Amino acid sequence: NGNDNVSNKPDTEMETSDDPVDSISDALDKVNINSDNTEDIEDIETVEQQSPEEQEKEDTEELERQKELKRKEEEREQQKKEAEQRRRLLERAEKKKQMEEQENSEKERINKWKRLKCEPRIDVSERADGFLITGYLSKMSKDDLEVKVDENNLTLTINGFI
Image (cartoon, rainbow, N blue to C red; front, side, top):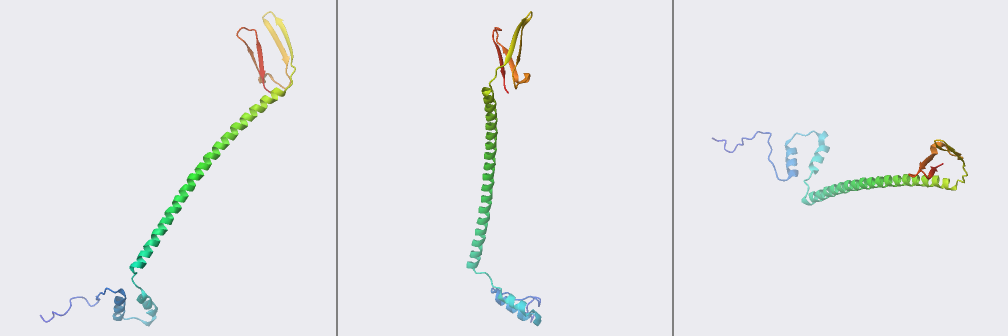
């Protein structure tokens, strides 16, 4: 067969080269190109493969971007934790303030009682079934008073707050 030197490849296949610029140039030589596409051809011809140094630089930059994103995420998490701690501290401070206000209110109420100069008018009369005690305490109602008698029925205690 006299076709030993003839390639069985289709006419559309091109030979490949290790250098991409040479391959593009060869491909452009074999393709029918209109003059309107000359700018595109120039762009294609300027495409170069990245050198290992450029690839390493790009990889390093990507690692730095990832580290920065991770650092920012950690910073946001830390800020969230700090905000939660501030919220808890604020709640504790508010509770403490409320308790102090209640204590101060109670102390003020007691101090008012201590400052009250009270000269109650009390009448005690004996009846067949016991004693009747009547009295008048200014600025007080019967709901403000507590009356106690000791176990031996010898002492009568009247407590009250204004």
